[in-house]
Length: 228
Image 1 (tube, one colour):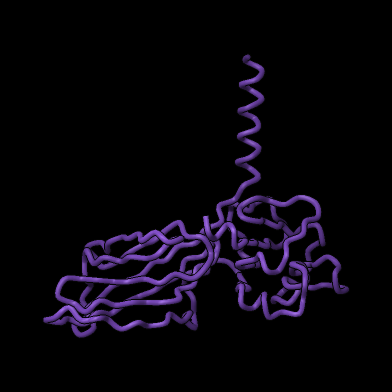
Image 2 (cartoon, helix red, strand yellow):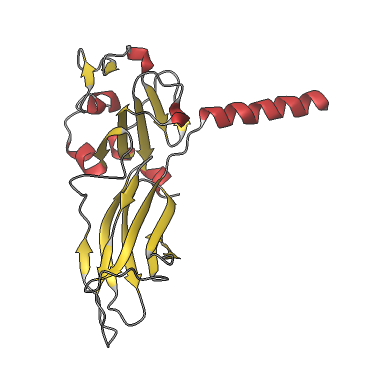
């Protein structure tokens, strides 16, 4: 019985070591459009797989939503005495913080708020590593059929021949780590293009949790994982 418990514990440890978190988060600041003062305790709601969830801003008007699987989210911000604000298409990537600040206008009446489409900033403070993100739309439009060829189109990645292995910033071919839905892949694997939600390619500044990667890290999020 003791041997069985030890074996089970070792299996759990090995599983934990081979798994990596594969989530992102949204952070932002909610302020008054005229005074620029932060709005504490404003409500920020979002739809996650058909379930409406929400958080509130802190005393400094800041909010944080995590963990979130890669994909796009619509946010609704409401505050007493202010016109509700809708922010659509906020893009979340694995291992990345997405910033979405909001300014609200005071109103004596509760009127339908504007719907604004989120756009990524020119300089993204949420990226701490050298990262390229390939979205589901880009994957669907690409002529490449396999993951490796898609990754080969990103900066710092070299592929000697189509269908062959890749080198990330001059490292060896076997130095690239592939992580699919949080699980480290060993050996060959195949994923249909239509099943991929997003591919994030980390070619520099690799986070500590991927310490066993001497080259780049390719993080793949599937659409089935996004819907969990």
